[in-house]
Image: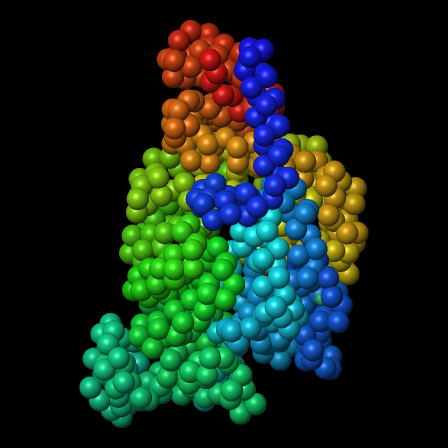
Length: 607
Ligand SMILES: [Ca+2]
Ligand SMILES: [Ca+2]
Ligand SMILES: [Ca+2]
């Protein structure tokens, strides 16, 4: 850098500082940011921060099976709430996150499940009232305050929504709760009571693929498979009121996750909505459109999207995008959960094509990074990812908007997967691998999504409840027994430590990412891949200047020096992050990188 450009840079920094202190600029600009320009932080509010002890029991009386509250039990409410989340916005913003994905906040059935296996709705996925915040988390006014406070900082808020099911309220006359085998459309047609030889019902109903109100008005008897009923005490528990009528549900018993039952079956009893019915489509559009209107939120993460018929999303998604545009939110982000344990971009992409989802959570990325960084395989899946982006509706450009992640609240955390593949792994080796995974997350294509607590070294012993540790001092023994990555602290202490090595590592790379257009919005070209642990490299290109940023990762425990193909015009490089960038190309089209074990380098072509 010349003295002249250095002084220009100093002036620019000065101007930037002035802009930053004149906060209104950030406030108005956040709406203009595209989804791929965000860094997302995913929080389960119950497990994040307790800002109000008076709501811990959700205003309910009695023992944990009535209130849902037991901070020592991983399956119950622990006390976190929206006020707590609001108090920690500084922490989240300093980590470098620009958008918060808040786990579902709607009012839930506090406790459900068969006798002896009850648990609470602390996760938020068992909604009864779709119009209000669960009292354990606070009030609608608290949510408004949170969204406004985030916006005032230029941060966005994404809601986690569910249209597939409600809480488990509906029961069946046949069989026993918790043991309702799936009854298919062929064996139990809409046209007969019980099986196909039963008495005729619902005359004139032409099937659930005829999506007219006229047709659905002829479906009047919901006892075509099971005989559903709503227990008296819960007759009016769902809001809006139409949700209390069993006719708007599938009522075919529990999903076995296969074939037809994947979309028509109940998730372990959760009442599966008849999302083919235009009344249900219209009802869900009204419910969630209202949250856009009232709160001006910035996007939706859609739970269990693959368990709803694609036609539903084809109506829902455009309705939400148009509602958001009317509200002055041009870059409303919608991303669906198409959960899979495989490297399966074809499945993920099919939901962007068949259902018209603008984006899906990138489970393929998670799989590819774990496979590369756990030290057991090469980097083939990471290398494939770029090619497979062509599968998505809108191709590689659309793939920029896929939220990428290393682990989550269902599958488990990244550190857990690395430990599982490497039993007894040394602490410094584990930290290095967790850093390497985050380096990939924060520089490769997609919208980096950090699962709360990963930046404090949380790992956990598995998925689901085992991966939902408390950030505030935990009273759950199984959480507190864990050795965290990169610290001697445990989850028994408060874990908002901004000096944690992972917090600092993520903050540095997140800050670099958001100011480097090649990393948020650039196309990707593969440069190097390995059959075993070794070198993975890609280049990404500034969408305006075309300038190259070379990203190189060493997934092996040995140092690597290698020639990497670069653009012929990329002759000089500067290190943006990591170590091992060449300062100059060896020859036009070839540069030598030297990476330490499990190291990485972000190298910007410079002139
Ligand atoms: Ca609380
Ligand atoms: Ca369903
Ligand atoms: Ca049920």
